Length: 601
View (cartoon, one colour):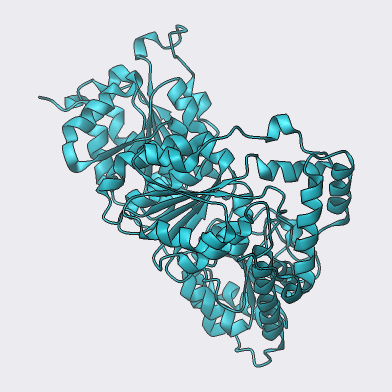
């Protein structure tokens, strides 16, 4: 039997190293489903519960080292559903190929059922390459270009394949045409290094500084040794963007932790007091958390010349691979003899960890969410992978979780989409079935996407060599982060109709799926709960009943933020009493952590 278009596309994806596709079936892609069936165990199709989650999984697949992520969705509603996950990949610069079905070619333009102009729909999210296939002879170069551009530009590409074309024979049609492209599936990633003269300019600037700081992002994830070597040579403190949390372990005394609204006080002080800034692989958009303009001279290293020099007026911009560029730069840097600045940074970090611990030990009703994250750090297996959703969980992940060497971690760093934590965790387990994975998720995100994708966990966990996947659910019965935004940004009291969530028994629901459920409400039980979760022989949902009144305080509280919070409380916020009580404890811990600490065991 002659090979059809769908068979050809699947086989060609294999030439690009693809072995797993994420998606949801529909009649717009029946041809591809048949091709996958015929391909047997050469490919794995992961059926998500929703196309958005399939796209999020494809993004995380790429983030955690699985190569090109592929998302396969049907025409019309299926394609529309996938957009949010694809935007997550685009904004976090991950190579993802979306393959979307379409109605038959003969009815396009006739207002046919489920007919959507998919080229226009995907034109923004896949603007580097989106094409609709109309003839079998196109398929070779369309697949190859879509894969190559996604990998080369670290972006989203899209192929739209009408369902009747999927069943058409490739045959001799693939060799027709006067200008037939004859592409190759070979792809290599170049090691880009700046010009020697520019490296010397950067070194001269960095050597002249007395109070150096570094900011690292996801572009430095493969450059841990090089970042560490340069930081030690310069005597620099290092702050980490959220996507770069795993670049350096948090037990280094000169690593100040996260930066930004959810960042740490040492990172804030580092940026406010440095006179030299080296940015490596980060495009963190919150420039108000960088040094004031004119205070520090800057150097930036990034592989993408379109983004360099965008967030801070750096004097030397080096377009290149972060690891290779830092290796070339290191011999040109002077070894710092005066360690006074480094010792100041280390003292800030030491004091900060005392503050974090003190805040985690504060009493709450019933459980302080910071305590849950603080206790997690000591229980994380050495090879753990951590995913985090968007919400107050992000704040506690950024500040309280201490990653160690070799751990991986990620989240939706730029789109900041809720509902990504569990899909990310599933993809992490599929790429690394031999490693334990932890998803840190709020109850809003669980009700949005997480609960449904636990069904996917139940479907696949017995295939994993290490069955440990722990989903922490912070159950505070509200959309907590948005509540704090309403107060601190808009000066408005919590609107209960929009913020409160319906009751859901997350741990018991896990048991219905033949997973393990653990419920914790007492701070004295938190450590044991984590131990039990990591000792379990199947995936676990750890449901923590936490206090919504514990504030995720920014590293530096502005007058406007304080004024807005005061206005919100004066307007009759229903949680005013608890907010005042917990906020006073948090502020006191920041002033005198040793005095303010209150253990509840």
